[in-house]
Length: 84
Image (cartoon, rainbow, N blue to C red):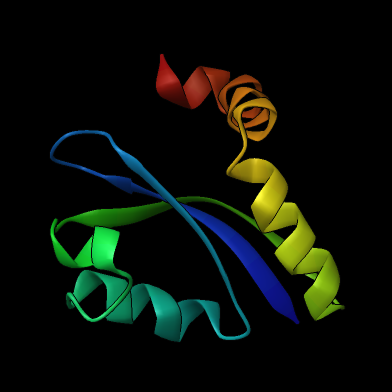
């Protein structure tokens, strides 16, 4: 399985969107400061949303969409109750 995920920084509420074949391990890396450049600079990342895919190309495409303006708007609608 491949996962597209959304992390939120507990300190400033910023988001990080990524994908991985091993979601638990990837989140552990982000929280330890060993993840992407964005997550290295901040601490206290929390998983707030994820989707699972059987195909890696589908996950990569979904990640690309969620990083776009339309994708972020989609996430805001999906997480409306969480965000308010």
